[in-house]
Image (cartoon, rainbow, N blue to C red; front, side, top):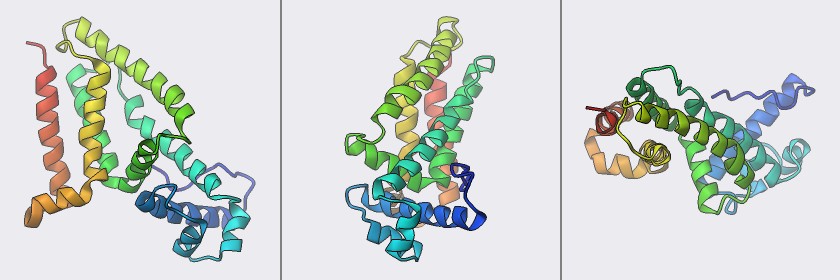
Length: 211
């Protein structure tokens, strides 16, 4: 997931750096407080710049949030895009689980930003999830259903399979404090995700294997 964006190709290098600084600060603020609980003042403080300076680059809180969500949706869909109809079904599902867990490990704030938006009724991303996300899910669900129909996987609802993968993988980003608390002194981020990948893959993939 690139921290840099080409959304303002006419901007100078300094302007792009300032925009990225603001977006990075806003990601931290929105992930912690949600959209409603966040303010321009909080974002400008996190970015280490004055409010007027921030407003030179983004007119409103909504503009900043919209840009973060657009960037997030591109990356949210990326692991799903890689499911290949020509690949081995078990390995494709295994790889998808790995990619989703890697995103939770490496981009927990982005995951929490998305979760906060959904919990608020998705007012700013309804069109995206009803179009881009649904189209991609329908396409990949058809691939998985095809594997099931050919006897390569047991019969199950492909969409609910994807929901299960989302729920288990994103848990480690959205509830990371709970995970660390429950694991206690044995908690190590790298080991946690290695163990999670092994466990989730074993449960889901073994459950899908055709006899």
